[in-house]
Length: 250
View 1 (cartoon, rainbow, N blue to C red):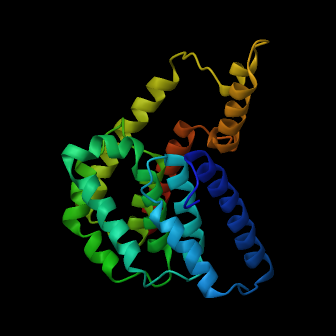
View 2 (view 1 turned 30 degrees about the vertical axis):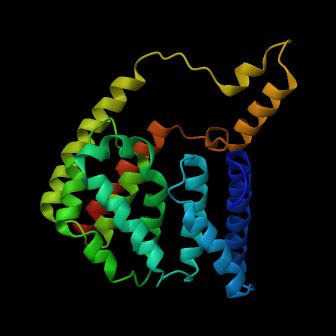
């Protein structure tokens, strides 16, 4: 993952997600302690941390998912590099000149880590200073129906459950979510032509290199691993946010 090409990074990071997910499921099922030298785990962590802001989103997302899982094991709580990732993440989302592109393309990897840190039984104290009132306000101001993602709504839901949001934040989010819902329902009513990667295989003249490349894309693409569309995931996350809000009101 460190020295390989983008293709090698994509495939190896996806394999790592599968391995770490299975280890985590096994630990949870059997209530076992992790039998792995911390030095070995730390070397993996260092590589993944360095790729959280990698230009290939698949690689960055896979690495952040792995880090999020390892965070749940209680192995990364005092890491200074994670604070740097969070500060870079929030500053970019607050900056109106940078937020438009970042919201659309690059925020998802770091948002996984932010959510995992907030879910810890004892979240790092510095998270309160990173996600302070002015920071959250700035991020919400840059949100719109076109750039809202399921990952971002999930992050706000966890911020809500951890008492990071005030009434103004909740009121603004409510308006943005309602606009987003209307936008999604309008978009879903339109007929859109969709060409899948699989359609590209239907060619008698396709060369081996092209087929190989498309097979790699199929392996790396989350579209073929997840049944939900992005719109469905976003709507589900919005519903879960309101569920959490109603729970807190009781």
